[in-house]
Amino acid sequence: EGDETVFVEILSLTNAIEEGGVQEETLTIIEDETAPVVSLGLSPANINENGGQAILTASMNNSVPVDVEVQLAFLGQASPLDYSLSAPSIIIPAGSNSGSINLNASNDNLYEGDESLTIEIDNIINGTENGVQQGSLTIIDDDTQPSVSITGQTFTDLSENAGTSDISFSLNTVSGLNTIIYLGFGGSSSPTD
Image (cartoon, rainbow, N blue to C red):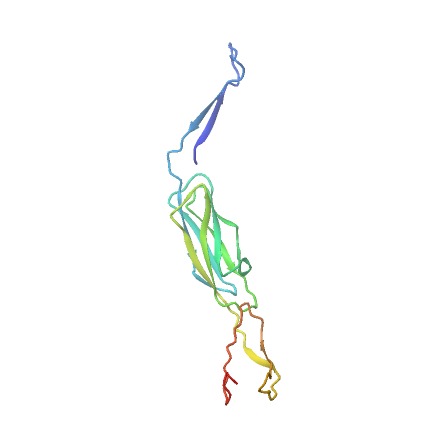
């Protein structure tokens, strides 16, 4: 609960008058219990991009008579476009020892590879964090890697003195990752030719 304040004042009198106008006293009830300690859990640790769901749970060592709000931070390769949350923070209702929200993977048609996400406690209202609490999640990509093909080439006999040739490559689908193409050369010429 934290410290609580009580105000005491005279509302009315019988057979007497209030001296010096309105009189009021303030009393502070000092909390003698420590704030609850909050831990963070995540299950499962791997979810599919197409329909996957993880449950984030905040648990306390004891219940308190007020709501506890656990605000989270999200770090890693996965962006907010890759998932959605059922609520912006976890609320542990008064009198309860835990609360949960869902993290749902967002399906797209973009190859990105598996993406990692670290979820950690950013701030707690009406509680304290049990050390550093975090969980790791992997969103498993369901899109196939794009394939590369040579699409345009203008091979002609090259002049040994300043000849050029253009080679073009294309992917069969858009990729969310940079594609690097390593080329190999062979034949009777050498790199100094």
